[in-house]
Amino acid sequence: DGSQSSARRKAKSSKAPRMNLKTRMQSCPRGHLPNSWNLGDCGNWRIRSETYFRDRRKLPCCSTMFELLHCDWVAVGDEGPVSCASKHPDFYPASARKDGEQRFLLVVNFILGDFQAVMTMALNSDAKWLKDETSPQCRVWN
Image 1: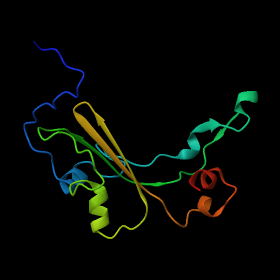
Image 2: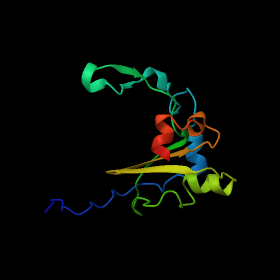
Image 3: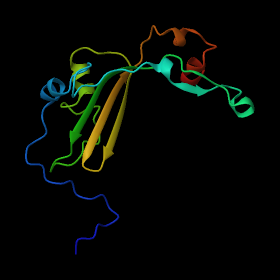
């Protein structure tokens, strides 16, 4: 009857299998070229200060807590989305671990309709905020 149930809808059939990680990384590399991704300058973002609700004052954002290592965007094929991208051999976290990455990784996995976005970030143990017990980031982390 064409209606969708409240259950997760079946992914659309893809005409081709999902590209492997190496091919995806070559197709959409980190950089400043078309079809690429890169880091932004956090200092351009203004965030609420401690006194924002009294004086509406915003301050420049400080550095990020994690280093962005990789962004991945894939079409969900017949096999459906990958629910545990951190352990799947065709996504960056497992590949990085295989290559020797030992830092704490934060993996964010979004499934958006027929697409899946996986972002991988790492905690640098030598980050200045981690050593400064008075920093907001350190207070959140600990």
